[in-house]
Length: 267
Ligand code: DC
Image 1: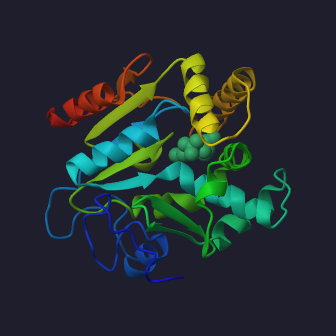
Image 2: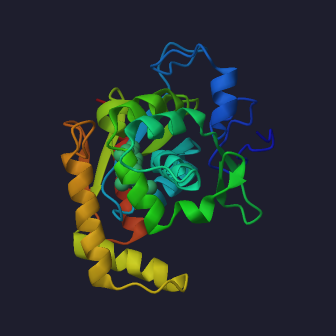
């Protein structure tokens, strides 16, 4: 794994050898990290802001901006599931073969580095798979793979290793319920399925991909149902999460509301 596979933009303020954007480096450098991610230099745990919600709720965009504003690390947990989905595709694995997918999860290396344009690139088994990760095929494979309890368990510590001072913004489906249940701040973002399909349509159209809004809406509803109904870590807001409906709201409005949550006293 390339040692330069280390993120150096504002998303990763701690330029140490254990930059959490290099998962391999983290697991090698911090093998005995306590699961709670306590900061060894202080008694107070490193603060975490969890941002959960369904696909297209704006989690990724909002989380990245909020992490930048706070100067905290950023975890895109969906990228880990997508990376395993892509690796499974490369190996031509059957998405119904849970055993093979679990082995694939253990065997897949996932790294993050900054691209030339300052964007975040994802390396799967050493190959830049950033664009492939964002395809509907990778998303659907990730959703199927994410329903396997052993896969989720295998990715747990890799996600918790991102909890590094001065803080972490963690984006996903179960950040506030399973991975960081003790997070100081929790947000659950929603938006109507129609608006989410429209946002996705615009993104894909800008990239020259030909899709229909109806097709995207059907995919979004199917993925929501699968993510919310799976037996392990289903998509649901943590009891102590602040819910924000982003339907009709601009990015700046949502960012302001999330930062307002962080500014409130924890608990
Ligand atoms: O957020 P995303 O669309 O990149 O996630 C891809 C899939 O991974 C999604 O269908 C659900 C799954 N996922 C999950 O189960 N738990 C997470 N914390 C993040 C993503």
